[in-house]
Image 1: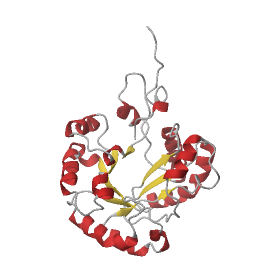
Image 2: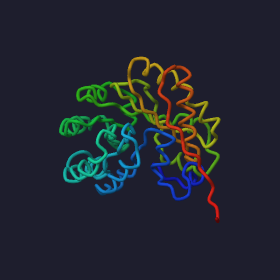
Image 3: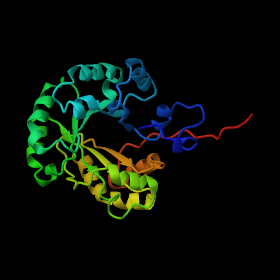
Image 4: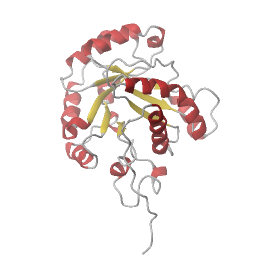
Length: 269
């Protein structure tokens, strides 16, 4: 999630490594591409070389494991994935277990068994999309707390509050889940995914509910990670920095984000 055409010349300078540039704006990233294909170990070593030691990767498990095999099987693919990401070391902030919308509360035994079989040493973060988990969230939370895993809320309420007005918003309406959000942390490292609108003002207005929540977690000594998206993601890094700034206004002493390098336009000479 560090490669977007709209970021060229805005976040990424000509010839600059895209991840290195992104890491100058934000200190965490969603590893969404690992869902579709496990990168080579050499590629992952390159990611480590482009990011500081305290940078956070939240890496999505392969879809073969979560969607095709539904946590029952796929052991070879999982071993390959875990081997590939080893060069990141402590930069692997959490393994992100995103489950399909068809994965229902009745499938919780499979999730419980899978989480307990995972090798120790990684934080676990689970995202569910079946509406049944909203009807009664406690069984899921009991499974997660039993293994020290976090639940990842995906807040799309602003996106669905009013009809879409752009092609990207219309596309998001067809693909993103529409579920109520429980802003509660289960561990010391909560993770939030927030999706706004292509209009930055609407995105900022929609995240106001999260400011006191995240500030409260910080005051409790937790270490939250918040990902800010819009349907087109054109201004996502700048919006993420603005969110951090608004939280910092509530929590004096919050460590600052890195300072981006100036992005110089390409020249002919």
